[in-house]
Image (tube, rainbow, N blue to C red):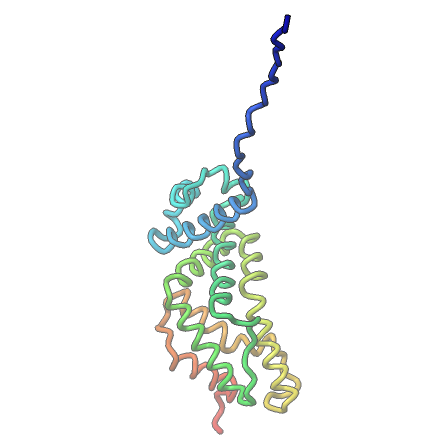
Length: 220
């Protein structure tokens, strides 16, 4: 008698379902950071610094306010970093190398070129609003004021000092002049006029500052 053999089939485990890649936390953090930068700068232009809040920045950026407090301790800190990033981004988009004041051999023309560009920037709300906000807040918050001076002002001032030092070596400026003091003759009046609204700022104004600074007030 032939017995019918039975074959026991072992069931195969189900094929694993395709898994989604783990979210990139670094990329997500960078997107959030950029959204916060943009929100902070937009709100300062639209509302002014006093009405800009961490809650408002978080809502505009689409993040929780805890995310902002994890990275920054105040809205001033957010704005300072966002402002620095604005400059860096503008330089990248323009394909600019690290900026230096041009040296064409004509000190007056070189300084006037840079100051005219500064006038354009100070009249641009994207730069003017955060600049005024940080300057005002820095007067009452010494720590913030010193950070602004170190990160925003000092690099630019050093460029002026370097250009004046080069002019000294070329015989265009007296060798006994301190470049760090001399640069204030044309930088500080512009900043004061702009911050305190004591008069309009224009190309003609900064050109005159340079002429007065380099040639003095005594009769020639």
